[in-house]
Length: 112
Figure 1 (cartoon, rainbow, N blue to C red):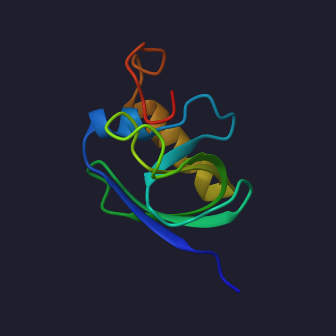
Figure 2 (cartoon, rainbow, N blue to C red):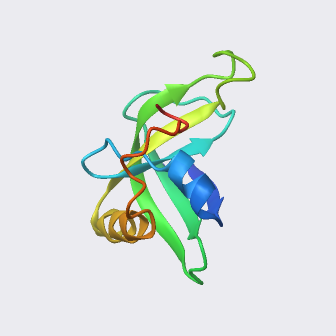
């Protein structure tokens, strides 16, 4: 059985900042979805990142659950997907380079 696939298009730095899970050692992304998941579920993320022409296919595990019912209007429903594997390392490096100087900002994100 294959992992569920979620698509994410992060075309600007503001959305990338809100979506990036900087507190995860391996890196990860918040993916808006109404699909049901459990912690540690495997998931595949197909990511379009800023101006990159490549669609990155990243194997991940679920580390955050933000259900539809949680604080409507304040929180976006979805999951936090932590990167695993080589593609994830490459994407983490690209994201952190793009967000250099803003990773320790006090601006809110989808997971903090």
